[in-house]
Each structure stands twice: as C-alpha cells, then as structure tokens.
Length: 386
Ligand code: NDP
Image (tube, rainbow, N blue to C red; front, side, top):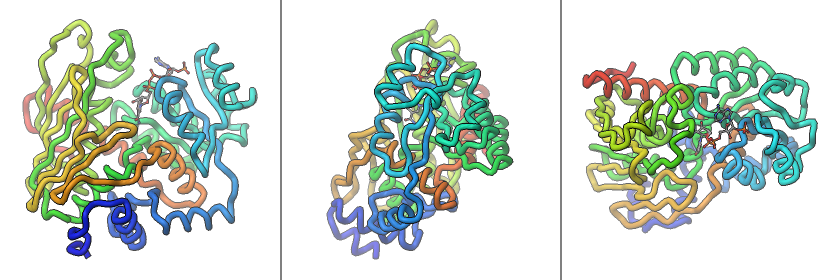
C-alpha cells in the first residue's frame, strides 16, 4: 500500500485517501489513540452525522481568560464549530464583558468572574470550561471546573510542574469529567502528515530530527517573562511545539536530554526566564532531536531526516500557512481551522464517550520533558526522562 501511495504526487485527494485508510483501521495510533480522529475524512464525517442524528445538542463552552488567544482565535473558531458553541465567559476585566456579550450574543447569566466562577456548576448551558489563563493558573481553574462538574480543556503547557498535572488529572477523574489539552496541531493536516510519514516509516526509519519555534517578544511587562506565571521562558511557550512535533512524528517518547541556554542579549527583559535555549532529545533507537526555542528570533520548522530522504514543514506551528516538503515534492493538503477542529473533536469525544487524542496524560508527559530540559540546562548534564 505504501509503495502505491509513494508513487503518487502529493495531493488533497491522496491525503484524504490516506486518512480514510488510516482512520478506518486506526492504523496510525499515537499513545494508543487515533491521531486522525477529527480530520476531513469521509468516514469520520459519516460518524459525525450519525452521532448528530442521535444528539443534536451543541455543547456549550465557557472561555476562562479573555486574552489574545481566547479573543483572537478561540472565539472566532467557535463560530465555525458544529458540535460546540461559545456559551459563556469568565473574566476579571469588567470592561471586556459588554464587548464580548454583544459580539457573541452571550446572556448575563453566562458571565462569570474569578470569584463567582464556582457557581458555574449550577449552569446547564456550560458543558465545557476552556482555561486560557497564564500557565501557572491552569491547575487551579481546571480543578475548580472539574469540581463544578464540567469537562475541561486546559491550554498548553498543561501546568508548570508534573505534580499540578497529577492533581488536574485526578480532579477530572474524581468528577467523572474529561480533560483535554489545547494541542491544536493534532488536528492540522500538515502536522498529521508528518506523523503519518514518520510513524508509518514511509521514507524508512527516522535518523534524526530538528525543530525550532521562536519570535521576538515585545512588551517587557507581560506575564510570559514572569517565571511565577509562565513557569519558564520560550521553552514553555513555544518550545513545547517542537517537543510535540518530535513525539508525534516519531511516535515514541524520549528517554534522555541535554540542553544549553542561549546568550542573554537583554538581561533586564530576561532577568526571570531564558531568552533562548537549545536541547537534544534522545529517543529509542538513538534518534536525536535537536530543538530550539527563542524569544529573540523568528523560527518555525519541523524536520525529519529518514533513510530515504528528508520530510519537513518549513512553516510548521502557526495557526495557518503551513508549508511542507517531502522527497517527492511539496505537500498540498487541505487548510482547516485548527481550533474549530480541536474543540469539535473534544465535543464529539464527550458525546460519543470516547477518549480524546490529546488527553491530560499527554500534557503531563510534555511538562515532565520540559522539566528534564530545564534540569539538563541548569546542570549541563544528560538527564534521563522516566
Ligand atoms: P494573554 O495575556 O493575552 O491573556 C491571558 C488572560 O488571562 C488575560 O487577558 C486575563 O483575562 C487573564 N488573566 C487572569 N489573571 C491574569 C494575570 N495574573 N496576568 C495576566 N492575565 C491574567 O495570554 P494568551 O491569551 O496569549 O495566553 C493564554 C494561555 O493560552 C497561555 O497558557 C498560553 O500558553 C496559551 N496559548 C495557546 C496558544 C495555542 O496556540 N494553543 C496560543 C497562545 C496562547 P481577563 O482580563 O479576561 O481576566
């Protein structure tokens, strides 16, 4: 089957064909779950429509923290979702309330602040709470949401230490509610294709990988530069995408890491967190993955060097505009709204009582990897990841 697919140039039809093959037999599994559960696969569309015949209700989502990501990406994406909708908001900023209420037709009864948030338990309009706060606040609000009986999505990184991840997972289990992480790229065709090419060994075994994600950060007062709110610097914020890219392309988990902090050209701005860093993750089979995260330069790529050639995304991690190459030519895949796909998939998982492909356990795995990278950076030693 692979030989036949390799002999065809990249095309949307081929991608959809591959998806239907993969989704049908669950051939590409990552952490035991099907990566392709929410793509433009005709089989999945049938599944979705069958599901909706039995359950037409769109699940209500409340966004917690109305910042750039909630306002710029998630709320607009929720205008394109089929299985969920923007039902409520939780904010600490009074002046945002009227704008959001009128823009998204949100009734007063679905507006909360951080003090009265727990009373959301009495609100049947809200099925899912989506926590979009600074990183160190994810744990508290995920746990409070679970205790209020709601399913929860936490933005990435899930938390700033694995202990918080454990508490979040335990709270959701105890409440019998599902927990998912905002890993939108698991629903983005170019990244899914990297996962397929790597895990199916379409170009043979992967020998090594590299990835970089970075941007010059502006406002020196923002929480991303404050360690107690962010947990760390660009590794927490954007390096996590490189870690994710390595894991889903290889389909395994790393076993050890070395890391080096980059120079601080602005020690005042970066007094609390690293300005940039590089790390080398070691996977089973001696695959070395070189990652770089930076708040000083623009980086955005994911590359895999395999026995029969290199496949890569030269624009890998943004909300749109992915570009990819393979030994057979450029990838040409469908464009999707990643966040709409991600949130619809979670709503479908809840309705169909099936696991999410981006669960809390995956978030915890990445938090543990991040901690190991920081430990390797601080000690200069190779750190094993258990
Ligand atoms: P912003 O700073 O733009 O927004 C954060 C919001 O959180 C604020 O607007 C505020 O909302 C609320 N807030 C509550 N307490 C604080 C506090 N102490 N300091 C600052 N804000 C506070 O951040 P982003 O939207 O960029 O990021 C939020 C989360 O989303 C982060 O975890 C980040 O990693 C993640 N993210 C994920 C992306 C993805 O692609 N998956 C992309 C970008 C971010 P209010 O005024 O309503 O109370």
